[in-house]
Image 1 (cartoon, rainbow, N blue to C red):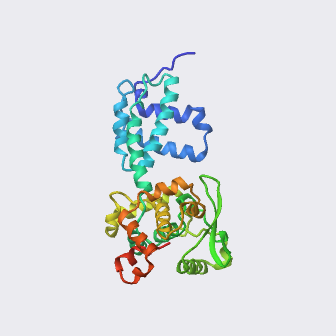
Image 2 (image 1 turned 30 degrees about the horizontal axis):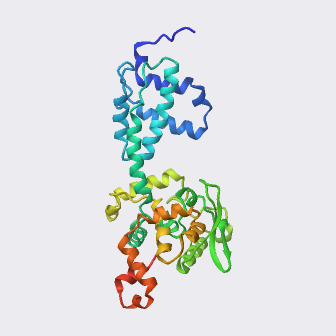
Image 3 (image 1 turned 180 degrees about the horizontal axis):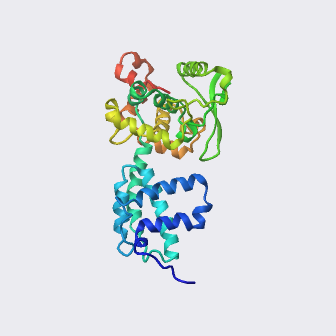
Length: 325
């Protein structure tokens, strides 16, 4: 095979990325969503303000490491960028467009992010945080928070819920869910009567039975949510809204409402096994979520369970025993 003869300008990282997107069969065959996501991250990485102007003979793991560190506040973006750059690296090494591997140090950045994500994703919101966010956040995000707090479902499942999925069982309204991650099918009851009535009001305002195909959650402009956009918009709201300053560090994420639901049910005396069936989690994962909960609040909730009569005499216990369930 004849060696590729390159012009001087083709020895930059930007030129390698350009060749990858034009010539790599695997990239060209990938799903449209994957091509879009990779292209978006690669175009940013290959801009001349970032890595694009670096000559391939100079480009080293330290450059990729530094670039990913610059993305570290945005964990999902950093992971996608690394996945895309790794594909470029693999193809370009085979095509002899890169002289050396460039991603060997990148995993250290991702490992640090994984530790942060584990904490952030599993930090349960408190009753006060849920109630305050519902009060001060943008209306479309407030509804998402409320639905997440009452169902404990993943964001990817919240955005797919449609009015047709609502169904009464034994006189209790709930929502049928097929979980995207596991394929599990379950019916999630609305255990709070006030929230059940509010959902009925939402449906009536959205056209009632005439709008069964519509999603329960929509953006401000009426369009259905895309999962990454729900997280992105909540992240922007968290940064923009001064009323949500306390939600930034550590960052409270939509997935934390899943842990919130587990904790509130557990404080009400529901067993981990029953929570597992109600929320659609394994029992060990329920326990995992609950171990991040506030220990003092857990203790006070236990006092209420053991001594119901103290509820009316101890306002602190009474307040902590309340849930948005």
